[in-house]
Structures are given as structure tokens and as C-alpha cells.
Image (cartoon, rainbow, N blue to C red):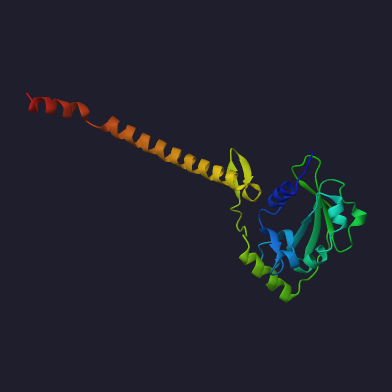
Length: 206
């Protein structure tokens, strides 16, 4: 079973669907200089707004050669590596990071190593919040839509797929309105005194 970065983003979106979250969250003015956190989520709580950063890895060599992730850790209270099963060993992850695997079914996530919780500096909080506001943030979970009883995650859909989903939703709404209109017309027709009107018309035209 091949697991892609987009697959993992979709699973993280499902895990943190009650949170405010962004993908590819910038931490500075440019991606080249500062990079971006693959997935960043914040619990919607005034008293405990826990911020979680996730770095997605689907290649072990990418994990070994990653030198930017320490820059991301200052912008979250907890930091996790998220990967397919056994791609990264627990012993390879530093004491200040957590580890999450995609589970054996490929439909969920499993925490292998819990990340310690740290305080964020005020200036770092302000920086990340500013970039979140400028990013395509997903708030109150409008990215999750239902189609045929299944949750559809818009962040993982390509533009043409999003357009297809949107058009289908419009058709569904139009279909519902048309059915309501037809039922109303049927009711009017059933109650319309057509026979008496026809008799009056015939009498008037004799």
C-alpha cells in the first residue's frame, strides 16, 4: 500500500477536524528561506490554545536530510513527525519530537511517541498567527463536506475535482428545489377547479 503526503494530510485533517488548521503553513517571508510546516493545527480554546505542528515524511532519506524542522518547533507547543508505518523508528526521533504512524488500514493515525508540550514565545505566536491569517486557513471545518455519506476533504482535491464536487452540490440543490416546485404545482393542479372553468368557457362560447 503506497501512502502519499496528501493521504497523510487528509488523515490529519480528519484527526484535527475540530481545530483550526492550515497546510503548508509558512513561518517566514519566503518558503525558500524559512520553509513551511506541512500541517499546523490549533485547538479552538481561549484558555488552552494548544498548537500542534506536523512534518510529513514518506521517504526515509528526506527525514534523515531534513535540517529545517528545528526551525518549525518554535511555532508550536507540540511537534510530530507523521509517516507510513515503520518508515521512521521511534529511536530516530529526538526527545523533543513525537511520532505518528498511519495505521495498518491506511484509514487512521496512531501515536507511536507522544510529543512533549512546550511554551511558545509571544513573538513566535504572533508570527505564526500572522501567517495563518494570510494563509488559506480552514476554520470551523468547512473543508469537510459530505457526499454519499462520506466525508470529502477539499484540501486533498485537485482543482478539477473541487469544481466537480461543487457542481454536483449545485445540481443536488437544484434537484431538491425542482422537486419541491413540482410538488407545489401538483398540489395547485389538484385543487384547481378546471371542470367548472371549462363549463363556464363552453357556455360563453356557444
